[in-house]
Amino acid sequence: MLSEQKVAELRADFVALGRQVGDQTAVFFDGPAGTQVPRCVTQAITQYLEQCNANHDGAFATSIESDQWINQAHQAAADLVGTSDRATIAFGANMTSLTMALSRALAQTWNAGDEIVLSRLEHDANFSPWLLAARDRGVTVRYVDINPDDCTLRIDEYAGLLNDRTRLVAVGCASNAVGTINPVKQICDWARECGALSFLDAVHYAPHGLMDVEAWGCDFLICSAYKFFGPHVGIQYGRRELLESLQPYKLRPSPDNLPGRWMTGTQNHECIWGTHAAINYMASIGGDLSGGTSRRDALRHAFHEIKAYEDQLLVQLLDGLEQIDGLKIWGITDRTRLHERCPTVSITHERISPQAMAERLAAAGIFVWHGNYYALPLTERLGLEPEGMVRIGLLHYNTAAEVDRLIHQLKSL
Ligand SMILES: Cc1ncc(COP(=O)(O)O)c(C=O)c1O
Figure 1: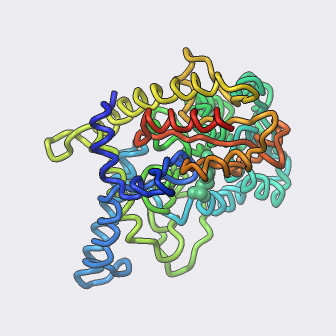
Figure 2: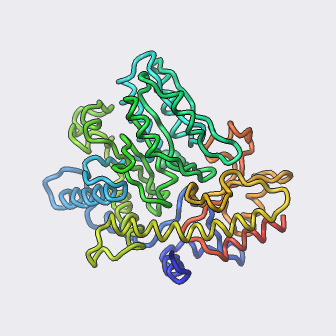
């Protein structure tokens, strides 16, 4: 587990964590909407812009170097998601844009009467793109429900929903609202058994656990670097045969080979290089890359350490929240089931609105999110629209002292 001293060392590299609100140091519990970044990431972005700022595929030095650096970023992202084939990684603006584009391409292979399966636990970015594509192609959408008492998926429902007409199963690795981690390997297995493709939204999971596209057996996975200490860049993985055979919506002169055919327009090169730095930052928590540890092994070890530390903070948070009258915690609270959740906790209060709670905490220098955080399928299902909930998102750069401050403030409301 990460020691307090190690966390203090890591925090020293995040300039933003030193921000003051009045006479208090800010507490960043807004990570699920975007994490802060360590210095190595901002330095990498500057380094790119100062040293090899050029477009792709030129004959001259800066363009050649730029392509080499971007290739390194593809390799780092491949190590992060768990594939050895870096050409199966495409970068893009963000998860939503990549999913919109992929859904258009996939939908070309669907026919009226086909079916797709979504879940009610999703961020809308893993919901609306598929609904729109299904509407365009006359495809029927089926939904896996949740257990409202602990906000887990009703995975028993897949058996009744999957059949030989199912073309796609889309599901999140973890909920950005209530933290639930889904049994994605099992779901991908079921999809494959009935001849459907599987799509995983790993945006919320990525800063908390090791992604593993090969072990999970998914066909597609998309995540976003700004949720794991990097800049605003989306990352798409797809199974090579599919990326080669599907027809992306693309310009005629743009490359037709992998990965270029899935990377629309000129990319955000400096932030792709920043993403490379963010992945190396996470790996550095688990091992010394210059000492011969492979990046994948270092990442595996890093997430092991991160999970143990985050779970300790999560228990402290749940213990504190449970002492507060009138507060409801949405999601898993059973301490023996922490492996089924990320340290992302949503709460409501019987008298104080989510917005009022977030504003009062903000005045005390504590940054939390309120509303539905685009997890609209879930807040609709839970009957929590339009006000939503308050979300406290813990990350490895948060501390026990910060959790204490939050509990203290919530008690004083
Ligand atoms: C679980 C989840 N999926 C998808 C998204 C959308 O990601 P992006 O902002 O990269 O489009 C988010 C963003 O909050 C998210 O938390």
